[in-house]
Image (cartoon, rainbow, N blue to C red; front, top):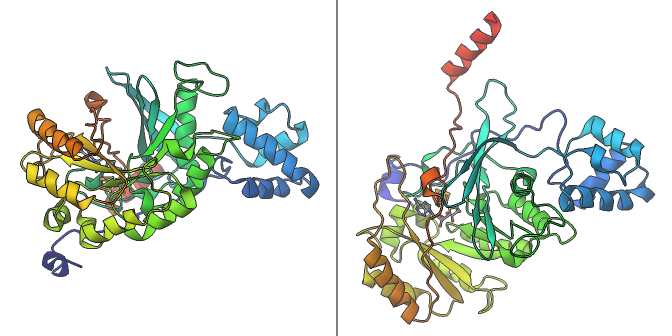
Length: 403
Ligand code: SAH
Ligand code: SF4
């Protein structure tokens, strides 16, 4: 259903169209390819079909288990195959252009992705690592910018530049393992890895980039490679209803829903996609989510906005709405960003809200803001990538010609 303002064309559209598409570099990376696709590439360099399965196993192990950064390192692969691969492909990940470390240990990486056009500003996304005592969580991006425009989210103010490829999504996990020296056989305080969990909660709406997100998460959870189990991967969506069931069937990760409001009128304003998929439809999709159970609850994220959605009446209605859904509620103190028009609820109010929800039988942890000093907390991510205007492009071309 469209609002009157939207029908009149005065409101921003609900869904933005990507400005760019991915243009592969001359020598593409093998990262992000499935086993079948790797076999095809091996065929292209002349590896006979009877050898392909074995070579794929080797490549998979080197790339996704050991984190090899060049074909040279892959000593169990024949020299001839390595040379053939290196002529046509790489195992490059997104390039780290900046690393910031928060005083609470959170790390944020700014990653550069190929833009396919030298006259174009590079495509950039952010990826955040949050260490905790019992786990280490990596917050991964799925789009440069976001299809949607939630009112309280910094990324939502950015234009949608493009969808990430599966390789660029898996590549973020690999960059984190590279930077943290977290590949095979590493001993750490919690098991043998620093990155133990992945959340699709960075820039972008993962369910508007479904295929790439699915292909990437299947690789991340493959236990002969990166090996982060699907129970430790959470996909967060603002409510793209038609793709929720698909996510359950084809990915099988844990589901988080960015609810943030319990009445359609307010949710239409905070999460404008609600005008297309209102609360009742969204909650029905949650009831039908394959694999949800008391042991595998759906997380409902609820950002605490002072005087907007944080009353006890809201808490009561929330509990009522979630009846019958195996749910937990994650209260997120609003993280401000330059130009944001909301304030974070008072701590006292967050506690009251949380207590009500808890007494009604729901786990209701308040998400401790992490990395606020480096703008790495929820909803604060935004990269500078925007498409250059025709005039800027012309000026750049002219400069290039006079060089
Ligand atoms: N697009 C997806 C995932 C990325 S956002 C989604 O919307 O679910 C990850 C979480 O951060 C979402 O719950 C989102 O609503 C929340 N968030 C966005 N901006 C925020 C802000 N400024 N403060 C706190 N949480 C925010
Ligand atoms: Fe996009 Fe999620 Fe931000 Fe909404 S909250 S604009 S869906 S990243």
